[in-house]
Amino acid sequence: MTNLKFEEVPIKENYDPMVNLVDYPFVLAPMYFEWDLSDSSDLWTRKSIADKLFKVQKEHLTPMERKFKIWDPWRSRVVQNNIYQKFWNELQAKNPEWDEEKLTLEVGVFVTKADQKERIPPHATGGSIDLTVVDKNGDEIDFGTVFDHFGPEAATDYFEVEGRDVTIRDNRRWFQKIMQEADFGNDIDEWWHFDYGNQKWALLLGHHHAFYGEVVDPIKFNLRPKKDKEYALT
Image (tube, rainbow, N blue to C red; front, side, top):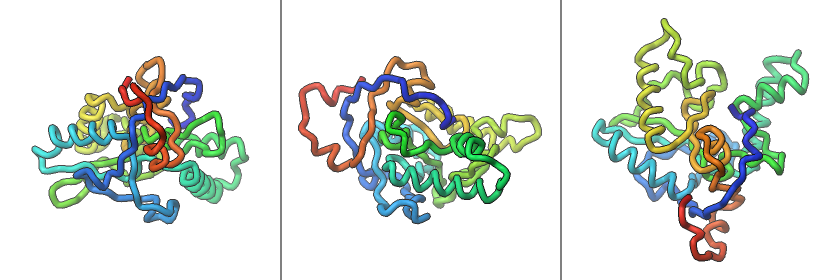
């Protein structure tokens, strides 16, 4: 669903601050740092998203002795480009007969290009988050694929087809339910990806505008001069 045309959705930035998730009781797994696609292990997101996740965890996961495991929230355009190029190279190697147009289309299913100024990558707003759920032993709940499995099995409704694993189907249904109840929108091509407040979220859920624009640097974003009413959530 990354090929979704969301860039024309207007943005009314509310300056919801960025927070470092190290200050929240989640399990953190900075995958792109571990894969040498990012030079920082810090995981940042908008405060409202962190607070929403904390509330969902407390109400739905803690009674089951589970926690959220965060893989990737905010990311810079540099990291976005690194991911895009990695996936492009992998698909090109597997499909040497594909031309540039075909590669662009297929890569775009899962990864937004980073070099289009008019199109803000959803993760660059601090309004997208990739995550899963772990049990009391730290083992991931079975949702059918690993993180960044760029294939048909990653689609949220893949296991809705008769004859496919019903346990995974039910796990995904439960995950979607608790996130949607908290007003998150899901990327139908990636069961682990959720949006809130950005242009993609607004388009998916029928809102007239987004309230998260691009964050180039989380620390500098938080240090900008503040004005009255800037932090009123829309």
